[in-house]
Amino acid sequence: MGNPVELMLSPGQTNDLICAEPLLADSDPAALIGDKAYDADALIDILAKRQITPVIPSHPRRATPLPCDFALYCERNLVERFFNKLKHFRAIATRYDKLARNFLAGVHLASAIILLN
Image (cartoon, rainbow, N blue to C red):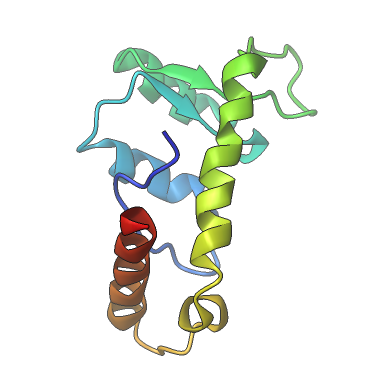
């Protein structure tokens, strides 16, 4: 848990919710742990159809809060720790590469190095 299964770059001007469905297309997780930004009815409906448990706290503006397993949500810190380790690579943190494919290749290389350590 906490190790990357798949990586994708999103355009800088869009939210991460746009990439959630394509990233889930090739994987079959038992649960999806996300922050409040992933609290969207469209994503939760997709998760329900695929029988994936959403572990997403409700956004404060939601009229009726959805249930959330906060004990499992605490495991989200493992993902945050991975991104913290990834940002220790100077080329990743400062995004030296102008081309997205080169930057994504660098992210894949740095991820492999992190997983080997």
